[in-house]
Length: 316
Image 1 (tube, rainbow, N blue to C red):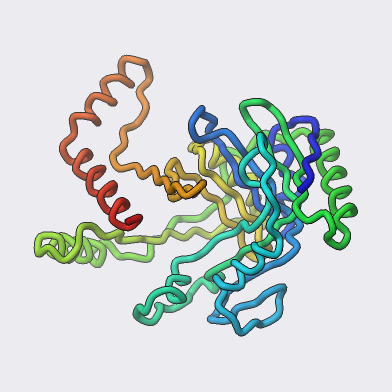
Image 2: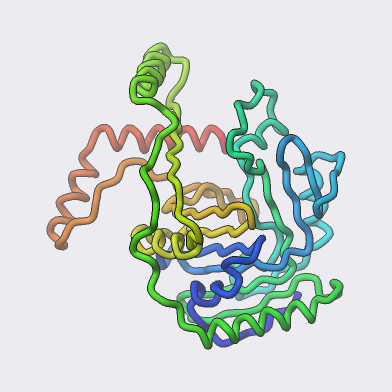
């Protein structure tokens, strides 16, 4: 493992040269705070690529007859390296997404519904070179995990070239509006209300504690839609410590979450769920009043206790 410290620049600006390149991933602490929002990471030029789509598992675009999770574990072992102390915690490895349908490799469940979007169930790159940022200390590094990899120095030189380009090219302001048509949901109101009623009945009968009745909203976008511009606007209106932008070529993923799902370090697992929120006030006095209202809410307290209990049970 090698760490090359570079001059600090804003991670959003640093990522811009790669924002349209497939398999470029930006793990972003869009909201800085002392406990959670401290580091950001740029992952580009993966040395290995895994996808699961349409029931087929591909490794570097070649079909593989293997369990994807077992294969990913083997790849991580092959690219393992001791962590460097005092540097940001993610120092290379796997980055990407694991979709809900990947649960079928772990549990026996009903057949999946219709795949009307045609998106992969898993897309994961193994990155042996990343750019890591300490937002508090205003420091940045190029971290190289596999020093003996083919063309590693050439790829590191490209990283430096793009970073130089980013420094010389200030970002314009994020777009404030987008050429988008009317949003459409996939759940008619009456069907949605029937689903809620069924869930309430299941809860009262003791069959379940909670259910997430997910609804997808879709909108048509204009030509030349600025994916990274959309993400930049998202992080402005909803800055969150667990934000991400994944440019995958045929599609992109923009994410902004205040919740830590899981964090594993030295045998300790941490989850930080959130249940119950209030808006911010216009003044410190309004903030205090809204916080007091939230703290006194029987419903919100019950939700929080429920989710903490569920997570504790699942971790056990």
